[in-house]
Length: 308
Image 1 (cartoon, rainbow, N blue to C red):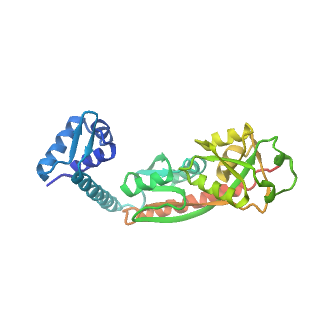
Image 2: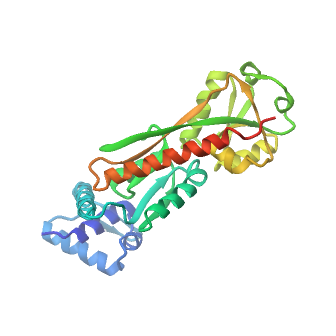
Image 3: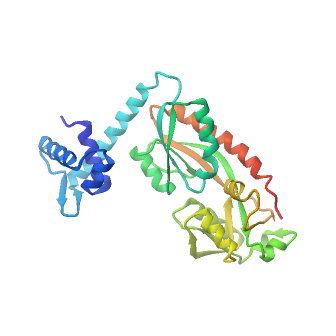
């Protein structure tokens, strides 16, 4: 019978399309990986990998077997996790995916608190685009995901956690920054900057622009919240930033002005996700609740940030 290790090699080639990178991902030497894949092909009696000079592609039957092998590996991992639940707390390394618009401003105190209560737990943090990380979660590449809702994927448990306010900022010398009373009508035709469209935040900003008649600057999309803020500071336009970022980076002053707008109530929804039936599903729920509790404390602090 094929071995689980051979299945791991096949999935690694499917993901990387290159023997060298696949061997590195599977923590094996390239000759070992190649030899084991040939042995797997011999046992199954089919060609799984089409070997090329500068890479590797799976054959049609190879792609089908790789996807089924991926599910087998996920099930085996969940069985192992279930067996390890002899103790009443998480241990080992939790592969945790998080949005870059959220993780750096929320997770440090969460991780510190969890480490105090569960010293055997380690976090392997991976920042990335939420939609891509949802795919990684489904594939079993990560164990748990924290990011803006909606999080979509097959066989996932989604736990809504909190709503994060979105705050509008402007260059310090912008007329709105000096205006005593700002109304929603004052935002009409205002140029607004955002992250690139792969981010959920881009969609939230685009919706606010649509609702309030603002002009989303699609030719000037930032690669990070810092880059968006810096473009605002240079006078390129306004921006809508998450409250936890504002608390972390602007609570002691900064290079942009926070606008207090009458009737402004923009928020985004944040949630956590893990595979349904995962061996540590109950523990993942406890981690999610810890995150929600810490977010509430931080957002209470963020609401105290001085406005002009």
